[in-house]
Length: 75
Image (cartoon, rainbow, N blue to C red; front, side, top):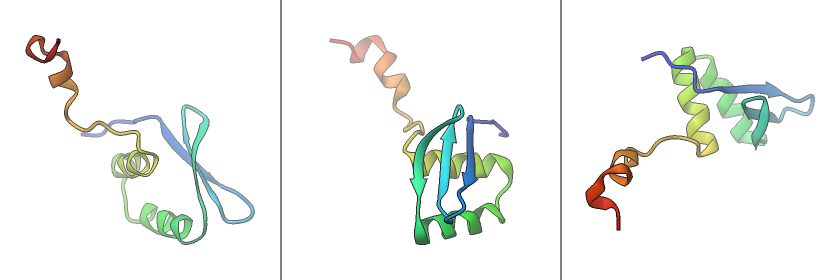
């Protein structure tokens, strides 16, 4: 499934990597984490890169959204 989750990234002159969502910085990667992220991007397609950025920022679905909407879960 090829979905754009709205994530992007850009590097700073000092080697840090900004992870963006909707054009706003949500996470800043430094040092080894920035290097590992950039290395991973070379091996990933766009959909997998979006999912990687979602995991790194903590903005991803955990699979329990439907449970909270079901009437049996409401109090």
